[in-house]
Image 1 (cartoon, rainbow, N blue to C red):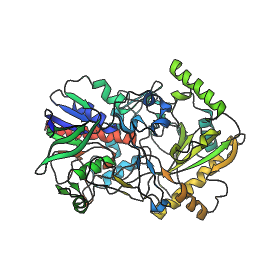
Image 2: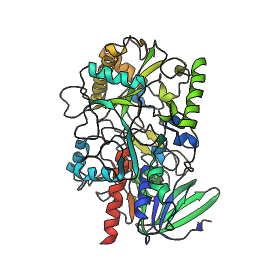
Image 3: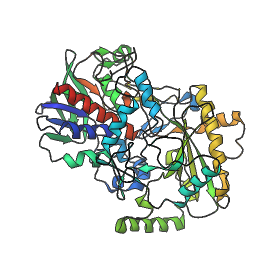
Image 4: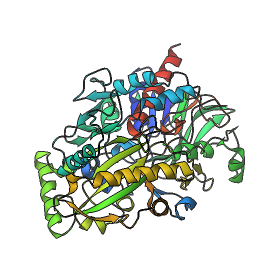
Amino acid sequence: MASSDSSYDFIIVGGGSAGCLLANRLSQNPAHKVLLVEAGDKDDSAKIKTPLGTVLLYMSEKYNWRFWTQKEENLNSRNIFCPQGKTLGGGSSINALVYSRGNARDYDHWEALGNRGWGYSDLLEHFKRCESNLNFENEYHGKSGGLAVRNIENPHPHAERLLLAALQAGYPYNSDFNGKTQAGVGMYQVTMRGKRRESAANAFLHPVMHRSNLSVVVKAQTIKIDFKDKKAVGITYRVGKKLKVATARKEVIVSAGTFNTPKLLMLSGIGPKEELEKHEIEVVEDLPGVGENLQEHADVVISTKSKVSDTVALNFSGVFKMAYEFYRHVTKQAGLFSKPIVESGGFIFSNPDKEIPDIQLQSTCSLFNDHGLDHKVIREHGYSLHITLLRPKSRGTVKLRSGCYSEEPLIHLNLLDHQDDVKDLTNGFKLGRNILRQDAYQRHRGKELFPGEHIQTDEEIEQMLRERVCHIYHPVGTCKMGSDDMAVVDDQLRVHGVNNLRVIDASIMPTITSGNTNAPTMAIASKGAELILEHYQS
């Protein structure tokens, strides 16, 4: 028997990048009583606060959902690892800290699809409102928001080497990928406050935890959204062995992420009728688009051995060096542990016919294979370059494994399903390899470990892509915004066909943004909070 908690005005399911910001904005008015429910634990681990802790958090069972896809038929029937943040701050507590908004054309395209108020000029104001930028003060950046954003101090020599090589290959330098233009190469800005990670929880939630009208519950798994007729009236959730019910006077807001949001909607009776009936779930609203339209940035990595021992390696001498670097971080907030794993890169065109960049470059100062799960490869010195396809045409799905809330969803990324994706990523791979062959690497360049110099023809590259392509942890789109038959929410982020229910997270993106998705998710939350507050002021 579920016990009843007190009633709230707003219930937010999911304390990730979107949920933390929503909790902040909605609780600003002391008349609004807000509940934030997070399935994961508190974000008080040193691993989360430490920028280089990313490499450990990807493996963590405590702070990471550690999802896996079904066998991907386009990728030689491989199961693909899908890490997702499971703590306050969500993905922003475990990611690589890169602050990238995507391209202005991404948002203008959303508006062109019929989503009023979602063009770039509208979203720019929300990016600025979220941001406190240490280095830029102009019409593209904010100075007074909660999220600390800054340039990287003292970049690793490899990061500068990659930048020099890209310049030698003919790409223009860009000091600000989030400014007037996205194209070019340079150093990324990152979400850091001083030498610490700046997550959405640190930026937006912790500063307001003292508010008496805000309640935050962690280690609380939401089982279902409760409905009366077609009106969302609260949630049922589990804390330990206790089943609890919380009621919402105004709205339930689902911000559980691209995999868990459609799962929760379907468990609650919102989704494709056939899928729900298969799992004996009572249908509240037949919405065929729930769990469809899954998009992800396909990614391939070139890893090269280094002749010079200035990169990260966990061999005998490297372990002592890393111990010293950890000591520097603890005592002086300096050194390798005080920096993110990705520092330099950029946005380039797979071919001259593209109107905006469709390939992202991200470099790391270590060898890398299979999401970092290949621990043997990091014993040697080397460097890696991620080549990422930004606007894939392939679409995947999220479905239910069963009608039980504790079961992981069935994820099918369906990467490289569209042949245009193969063609564009093949071209991007060639361009990335050309950068790594520039003179900047002459003294350091060793053997190309992955995929190997024997891979040369387009046919060989395609075969390699199907053997090696993974993704870059940017799933979006499974509850897309729009007005067509497959849309799940309208341009006010209200779920079609029911009342008092919104989805506000990366799952509402109709199409994926051209870059890392953490900053866009926060902008979506900022816009969503504005829509909610305006509604209840009228």
